[in-house]
Image (cartoon, rainbow, N blue to C red; front, side):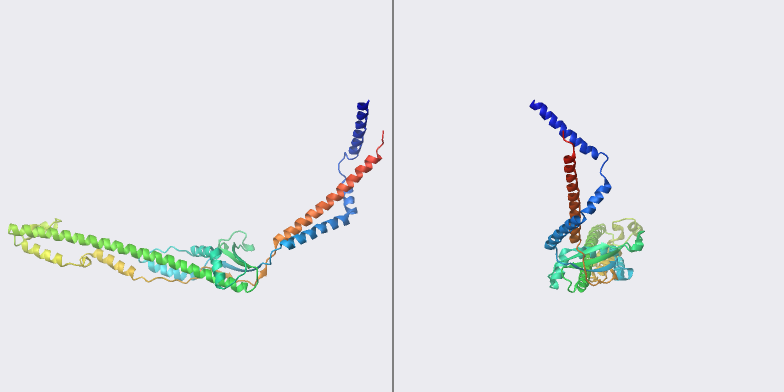
Length: 360
């Protein structure tokens, strides 16, 4: 009997739930939802504002200090600015010294030094600037250049940001000049290293060629001494008829030249103490060495960039993080308040349906 009573009770509750579900079998009534929201609009507004207030206090506690920024527009240096380096490169090319440094290479060095934290720290330390600061380089494409004109493809925005607006414009100008000096020092160091390498190579090549010429002279003297000794032993004092023809076709010194001629040639060969006086190739090599060793250290002073617009006055950077927090809390508050109103409405409606359903 107890089991039958439980079955009957379960059946009644199931039928009651089915009746409630049947009342909503055609889906949610959107108009009804709008009416529910409108009736509780003040509650939703208050709930959203409450969340915004919480977000405001939260972001205020975590809000960073104001950040100020100054910007400048620059581009790759022009041919006129690159001219001093180009002139030195042309002069060095005469001596077969290749300085392969382009304006793009120079600007790449400028960007590297500009973004270097070590360079920034040294500069700020030199001017005794103790505020937190950052720098950035962003490629700049004008709005009218959306098609990608190559002439404006090398434009950049240099930015300097700091927690203080004190003298930012002049600091950015000074830092740009400081970086330009670093780039010039680096370029001069590279060029002088290339020159020193060329001087060392030319010196070693000349010394080798000089030693080879001296060795050749020693061999000639040795052969002449042998030839003189043989001619003297053979009793050949004067040259024979075919002596000069034989000497033209032989790399040795024929005894047919006679003792007197060979001995005189030996004296002349021994008197040569500087091979450059009788060796044209070695003399030209000595001339090249003198020219390259006479080179002085090069010091170029070029502008590694072209100013399109000088540094601007400092402006306050917008705190996007703060804005995002406020938007997030406002959205969560709106959704939460609306959801609460709708859930409360349907809970009440369900209770009303349950209370109004016929009891068996």
